[in-house]
Amino acid sequence: MKITEIKVLVSCPGRNFVTLKIITDEGVYGLGDATVNGREMAVVAYLEEHLVPCLINRDPQQIEDIWQYLYKGAYWRRGPITMAAIAAIDMALWDIKGKVAGLPVYQLLGGKSRNGIMAYGHANGETLEETLHNLGKFIEQGYKAVRLQCAIPGLAGTYGTLEGKKDYFELQGNRPLPPEQPWSTSKYMNFIPELFKQAREQYGYDIQLVHDVHSRLTPIESAQLGKLLEPYNLMFLEDASPADNQEGYKVIRSHTTIPLAIGEIFNTVWDAKDLIVNQSIDYLRTAITHGGGITPMVKMANFADMYHVRMAPHGAPDLSPICHAAHAHFNLWVPNFGVQEFIGFGTEKLNSVFSHPLSFDNGYIRLEDKPGLGVEYNEEEAAKLTYKRSYLPVSRLEDGTLWYW
Ligand code: CS2
Ligand code: MG
Image (cartoon, rainbow, N blue to C red; front, side):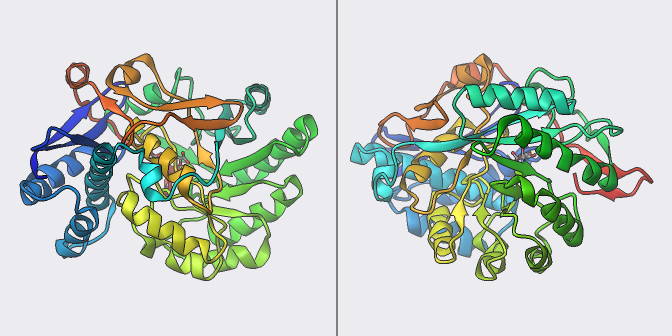
């Protein structure tokens, strides 16, 4: 079997997605997600100019050798652009292997370790009341875990809220330049504990709650927040502090028992190694698209398992249904599974381009058995929805200092 053609397909069904299609001489093809939010065209160039020429005529069944060739052979290794490009190729090769074998990818990884994939939904609001009302709606839908994000009084626009838009796609797909959003750590720290105090008073402790700090705090501020939230028994606090400084997590860990999750911007196991070995974290959030593909995610998970770290893959709206499907196969297999972030199945426009094998019932994601990843991509519909540059916001403190968004 040989790779005869590779297409790099960009479409904007509400927001930009980069999809890789690897076609073989036996007519079997595979799909991969190469989307890096706000930097999509950099990945397109890396794939088209630097990787695709090396792959034509290769045997697509040599998944491991191709991954090693693209990673070690690159010399300029790691980074979000490189690893998303490699990830898309890796996903597509696993898709092909499953189709050739007539098996869903999770069977090739080792079969089911669970029947359903526990998901956490996003309850957010412009006010504390709206956020708690939305939490109630997720509980009614049977969610076992929910993320709470709320606009901070006095700040215009806070991460994790819709800022008046109808959905994440409208929010993320219409930023012709990076919007600048104000941030105040003190306003945030004075507000968030009250959100979780009232959530527990109103809904009790059965529902598992998570919160995403989005890397806004210094390590000692994260420790302070962790201690303030301990009475509310969160499942985890995500991205408490930027993980460029992995040592910082020793500071957080030494002050609070709140479980810590991190990893959505990680792109190799090296980004997480010290955090795992030092047992500074409890959940690893790396996504298959940003982490280099299924091949390295399996290795990361096995390494993390040695240190009781569970996998909680990133599941944001800027990952395509191909990645979400790949996560479902991975999550069905991975022994040290924690939880899967789930933002729903998107809009009609998104589903006119991507069809996927996923369903949701009573708090769990289910995966329909189909060979490979089980996703289809409608090139004709996709071609009608052309790329539209859109950025992630940037954040500034109230004195104008540039801060982590
Ligand atoms: C967030 C992401 O889902 C999450 O946990 O951190 O939505 C993140 O903001 C986006 O992936 C950025 O593109
Ligand atoms: Mg996050």
